[in-house]
Length: 180
Image (cartoon, rainbow, N blue to C red; front, side, top):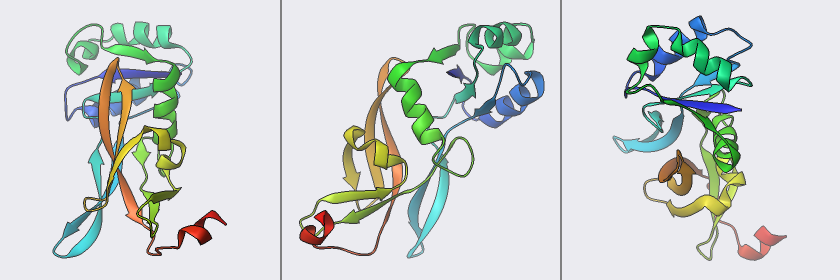
């Protein structure tokens, strides 16, 4: 089960360190904030950079959301971590599935890997690997120039538009061969 804690922007890493130190292992399996890898061009060369995806949110994997909330309320630091008293929420259903899919796509929890894509001769885009493989229905647009995929999903009761990084497979293939 996933819980999400809203914290001040820029306080995600400090909050993670606090949670890992303060919470017992049976309450908190892991905690992380989401970062994405994407490609950017600097000085004529493409570089891979890591950026925050949802600033101000820390995700906590737990089977005991009630115990988590009670444990956090007992600490004076809890009020400093967020903007109000009700800033820990349980993610369920599609929201939890979405976070699980993207949060486990990189080398560490919370790191969202690049998705490899291929542009076919007819202009269609084929997703070859990475977190977008299992979310093709959420992709609303792929910007080949910026090397990002725009996805729309529900998060915390609101529609969110997120941008994940893509990387080209250099081969442009014939559509007949791609189907074979």
